[in-house]
Length: 416
Length: 95
Image 1: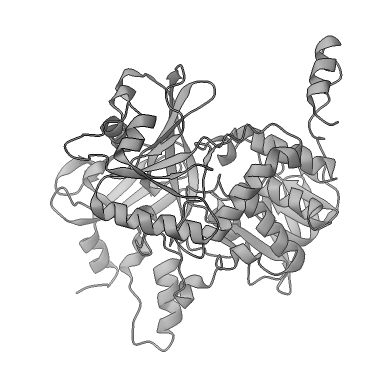
Image 2: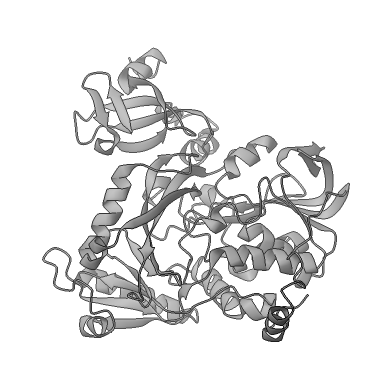
């Protein structure tokens, strides 16, 4: 079924009896060409692009819980491509371009809203660094715009520009950045993949890999063995737990990242704003809630909930740049589990086991990467060669000294 | 989270800096023939279990001692706290 304005009107006039399920509740077959482990945004996007761009058939996505129940439904929904390093920026710009055409491509309203993202500048040194970043972005075909404090005040009059400690001296804007309705991304990819014949198998936990003579021939699951020519792991947050079943240790620690949403307000915040002197970012959802977050808690955790010191730190950051936040009541807070890699950048690569591939290590930047991650992973799975924008995301970059360390922090996951 | 410091009693976790897996106490021998491979593992690879995890915490806002904390990564429950010095000596790390 194709969604359209005409269809909405027709259904409204006929009692909404013509809507069907958005995807089939598939039962696992005995074998597939491709088995993707993990029905999150990245896994569903991978299956979709495998079917659409690479013409592959017999694809299954295995999900332990339900579609949209993991990190794709737990993030702060921001999309952007304002990275510095060559290993990253072309990939994220590719992702932003895919976001721009996503809704037409999927025939699904994902509420892609290019309302712009603004990184605030609080010192002269930071301005220099952001000019460099903006230039790197433009060299890779992205848009970047250096704003003065006056331009920022005109657009965001509520900002605390003359703060004694962290005055706002300008900002680096990416007007094509913005937000996307995160659940709709999962549902849209699931529906579009299903329409191309992908089996989306929920409540199917992978309990082990079947590896024969150095080759992965399938996965053991809670719903029986499923054979596969190629198996793609795509479970960021739980990557270490999954790959341990194939006796692999990863350059990854799992950390909890908290996010917050205020009560619903009238429109007050027209874009995404990030604090440059601490870690705080905020946007306003279409329902009206201010959605914000900050640093990870900083210790290994699989708990999907954090602790109060980070709540305090995030709220202090928010109050430093827009004190009006203090008048809004916090409605909800939650935590998601991140694969924090050793250099803060992801991995999309083959493993040393034939037929077993890996996608993970997204740190807290996975949502914006969803389309490109899926596309690049599908490219790798289908052709055994990395996508041109994802050639740097290799396992061996740590051994070879080719880390992609945006912040220059070193191999300490809780600092990225 | 409260960390029950062996010398100072219960202290808030925000006084501490987190370093990671306590296996980092066992720095490999830099003169061994396979030192390069072993150091790559030491520097970059982690077990990252869901469940009991022995990890290093540094009491930066306190007495600046290193602790080995045994904590459940699923519940955040802390079951054991020792001075890293004692652990290292017991495991033959320093004399």
